Length: 68
Image 1: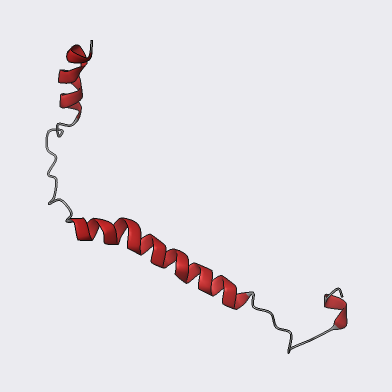
Image 2: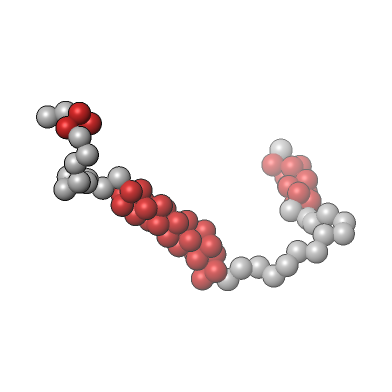
């Protein structure tokens, strides 16, 4: 049963007519694009959020805005 499906599976990986695939990525490029870049973006967003929501205990506008 698997042998009958093998030719159709091999054809699924074939390129369509008129397609012009570019060069493949190196291992370093793959790691940079799919691991390092998303992690750097996550860290950058995290830092921006932490800075924008930092405790501003020195600047008190009103005692009504906090609960003790």
